[in-house]
Length: 281
Image (cartoon, rainbow, N blue to C red):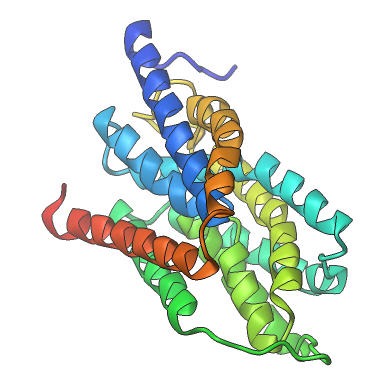
């Protein structure tokens, strides 16, 4: 039987739930404003909350990443349904990359469950810088004959996307979008197809993190392995409810303003984790 009630008294569990509620509002608002799946927002939000709750430093990043992936599952499913209704999901890309993405995700869980938090922080910071640079400099024109390259390249791309996404707790959307734009697909098809990889990455990764962390000591209260059920049940639904507020503001801003805002946020998060790596705070 899963021991959901760990060693904290109920009043401390309630305090953590309130903190997650506030974090969910922030996560949803920023996710709606910036048009992202939420992983790039929820991981740093969860990190600050669990740090304040004195979660052990040796496991804190695993808990943040695992919980973020669990939160992505329902969000990504709703997102891909919406994009599919508009005919923006290229199923051939999902079929051909999907198996390699899952394989990369499984390896990512294996590595993350054994790697120190410093490694995961560094990977997350580098990924934020990469995505920000793609927004700043990654310009490409759509091609009418856009197609996937031969199988070996799809293996490398899919495996890499699944691996890195599982290490940093995102649904892979930023990397799939960048890959498809590089190959010449229009942005709407790239974004719509990228949404389809969210469940493909998040479901096996979440299960893997639950199994890997099942008997780990010093987990936060109400956890299933490395997945914080409090984080999933509180931050997830609240972020979904708060997202339309950010989206409403986003439609009043120019595309370039949103890009600059997202780039600034990513660079801030990267700097935050770099400070934690260097000074341990």
